[in-house]
Image 1 (tube, one colour):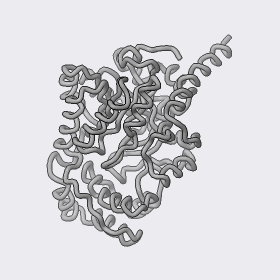
Image 2 (image 1 turned 90 degrees about the vertical axis):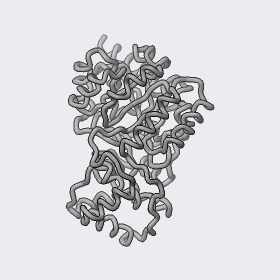
Image 3 (image 1 turned 135 degrees about the vertical axis):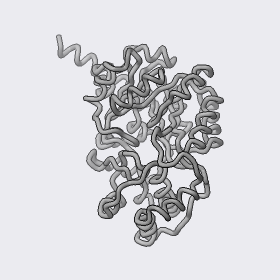
Image 4 (image 1 turned 90 degrees about the horizontal axis):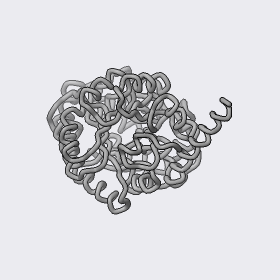
Length: 368
């Protein structure tokens, strides 16, 4: 696979970056996965948004025990929040007092699904107090790449440069891109709506070339719907310098994922993965479960972030603690419908790279 300028920017052999994916108080992108991708010549990336600062630092240091190659951390730092401060208890009380229908809906879920109450014991949630502390850990640990999703990285870019850290900004629209360009990020990730996790509304094929044209020469990675070499080649053909790949790596042996959620991914069709604002207040693509239908039937509008996230997290934590994974958000992209085999991460990366080479050769042959 041809080297692109992105490889030199990130000091990697192959222009494939594994997307950082996280869950609350845990990792999907485990240190073992991140290290395996970096060791195989791509760049692994921790999903740090669901970790406390202490947990994030431990995960970064564990990756360093497993690889000497560059890796990154992906953090969600929302630009728009329903509150700038307050503990989880404060937000819970605000929901109970000011959003009684939302509060009652989640309370009814416990009874309807037979889930014993087991509230989260961590007071931090997605307010600046948490995201600032997470960012400070990444800067102090001097990882190779910091990726910012949903937010404005302007305050972090100068500090990252001082620490020798490259900064990437994830965008789902040209409006998002303007914020990243003004912040002077080092690279841009153009993520289409078919991707997993938090997404915009524009699909990869229309989004990617527009972002490339408007990115003022900054390297762009294509994301959303890329799970084999054909997808990587398509991203390169649309002007990207590499690919940001998430869902394909959910099928890696090194991923920390419950067997029930693994089965949903392996057996799911593309149409089973739906974008919803239920779980965080921001649009996110997850495997469709019964909670989607019950929320739609209730006719409620989602609260802002972090209120909507706090609204659901206690129930999700309680359901997870008793093994009710059928009730819990399982983020993944629509391309999961094409994937069926669980393999080592290095094998997935190998097929992405060499599949792209084969597709490029095939296109040359067709053109001749």
